[in-house]
Image (tube, rainbow, N blue to C red; front, side):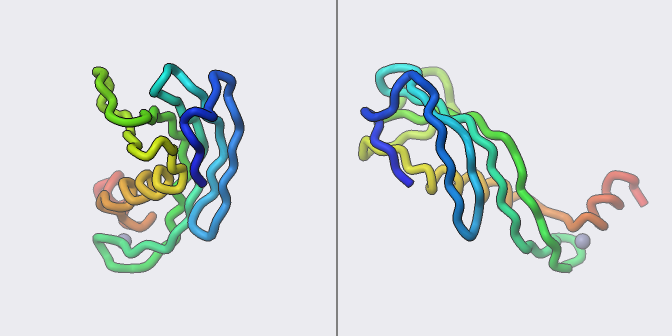
Length: 120
Ligand SMILES: [Zn+2]
């Protein structure tokens, strides 16, 4: 899903994206001429392989995300702004990068995670 920057208004607009990889629901609104804010809930279940024991397990990414996107280069102080250069906000790309960022970390299956925290 892509939305043109100039069509984003200062009133929060709801959106929902559902596909085979994730479900995302939230709102987007314009903060300034070239800046918009996205608030959403992202749910993405996936089968992952544990980095410790190698067993496959179901990992359910389930989190609230709030991020800013800019139309072109962002020249402010905020480092967490995602820039788009074709005047469209690409929601699918945002969700995919959120999911990738989470999965590029080490991930342990629930059993190993438990051992990690209890020190067994
Ligand atoms: Zn494990």
